[in-house]
Amino acid sequence: MARRLGAPEKWLTAVRPEIPESDSADPGSLEDMEENWRQALHYAELVNESGHSVSDDDYRAMAQHWNDGDIIEITLVVGLFSYFNRFNDALRVEVTR
Image (cartoon, rainbow, N blue to C red; front, side, top):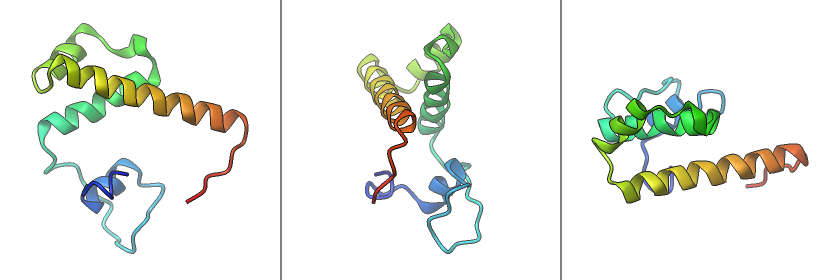
């Protein structure tokens, strides 16, 4: 989905280096990604780990870049994808493209 929405290939390989989807030997980098998106990725990792992993400081850091509605939407998307992944992994559902 990120690719379809225009995310640069180097960001995708930086986030998921174990699944190279291009012929590029570039390991990828998030260095030129805007701070708000880097913060959202960090927050997503915390939410995916456990909702309890998000501290007040983490939330305040998100609030510097995103409004309450954005944070709710990011949390919702992370939670849904975590659920779908766990559901599919438990039932050994094969990935299709």
